[in-house]
Length: 303
Image (cartoon, rainbow, N blue to C red; front, top):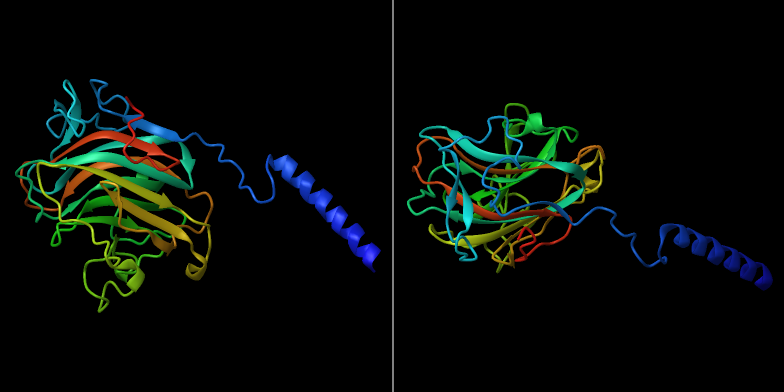
């Protein structure tokens, strides 16, 4: 018996060694990610919006490049300014990424202009999974095959950052998944679990409540979206969202059900300011945007 056990052990070790050699590592090492780290990068010094893929061409006065020292206080610097015309509408910049990804980080600097009204109902920009035709769609819960999103915006009552997400597992404000279903907020500020924020893990993490935002100040924003595995069962979901402001982490939010098929991947970065109704003329300034497969922090690879 001892000799037989030793032979089996040796054979298993050889097979494991061969398998690891094919993968280029040892049994304890993860396979290297073959994707490039920097997916998209702009410091808005191109002189135009030709890097972007918007069908409307990003016309002024909603989309303008303006001279501004920016977050790094650099002479001769330019930033993108998004302002929404009076009434309901939006200003945006959209980029279809060169490939599709399971997990991405997006980092940018943003300033809400002096005079901006944080009380005005709004939506922001961030990462989108799925076909371009689904960008901006609302009111219906995604089915796990069509789209998912994570948008960084300001909470109307709290004036604090929130990730507003449409995804298969939406539950916070979804009385009817077709017609009366709106995005989840991370963290969920709406209540303390009575109606909307019924999952304690999705409410603000103790000691990590995002800051109240002010105008005229540059903030460094970074978000991460991991689509997790494709599953037909919410209990098996392992998607993740995370958010940092000025390097301080306010997540992560885990076990999110983003997709039912591996074909649904992150495909778009969308910088947006949307207003539902009455709002101030002032909008947002954006600079130094990076999309990457790895954390970005304060680095400026576009320069």
